Amino acid sequence: MVRFYMEKGTHKGLYKSIQKTLKVFQTFALLEVVHCLIGIVPTSVLVAGVQVSSRIFMVWFVTHSIKPIQNEESVVLFLVAWTVTEITRYSFYTFSLLDHLPYFIKWARYNFFIILYPVGVAGELLTIHAALPYVKKTGMFSIRLPNKYNVSFDYYYFLLITMASYIPLFPQLYFHMLRQRRKVLHGEVIVEKDD
Ligand SMILES: CCCCCCCCCCCCC[C@@H](O)CC(=O)SCCNC(=O)CCNC(=O)[C@H](O)C(C)(C)COP(=O)(O)OP(=O)(O)OC[C@H]1O[C@@H](n2cnc3c(N)ncnc32)[C@H](O)[C@@H]1OP(=O)(O)O
Image (tube, rainbow, N blue to C red; front, top):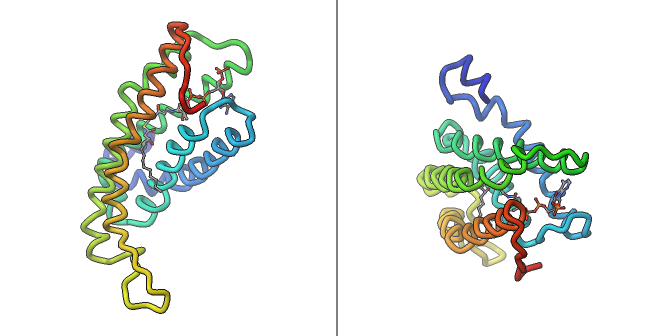
């Protein structure tokens, strides 16, 4: 992403140049939920599930499907937040497994999110918001009555509900990470309700 920006001097076209890598790695992140379900990592299934499903939704059902929004600045916002987070997170896992965890990586893993989570969420919400007029105009992914199954679905309202669902769900993730931070960096003993 940095190389793209240095070479082109604009964010326009960035999404197109990184989309394959983004789709592959974010889709594989579903394995994180599987790992929790089968118990090979001790992470809460609920926390991992919300985290991964919101990213999958953004990648496939918003950014991939709605081409006119791919050059929005808000897309860069969440791409940067996700990328910095995952570089730090997977470095943390790798060094932990090697039993040689540099303090800076541990510190970064449990501090960067304080800024990156709100930045990522802002990017995601602004991107969905930018998609709304297009979705309303085209009626994409919507099912109108009458039809032989007698069901209707409006993707425009679904997106509005998804945006609203960030209000109860995002604080759950953010406070979970704040608790993890207190546990890992300050050694506090925390009892998780959903474990
Ligand atoms: C259908 C439409 C759905 C729409 C839903 C809409 C609602 C969405 C609201 C939520 C919005 C989220 C938006 C989000 O996408 C925005 C961003 O991400 S912005 C960028 C900032 N983000 C972050 O900082 C993310 C932070 N999140 C995480 O770190 C994790 O994802 C989390 C699931 C929260 C888990 O963290 P936690 O610290 O609880 O557990 P870990 O899994 O990291 O660690 C537990 C122990 O397991 C070891 N572990 C885990 N995985 C591995 C691995 N792959 N390899 C090796 N070891 C692993 C880890 O080391 C820990 O071990 P130990 O306890 O011994 O230290």
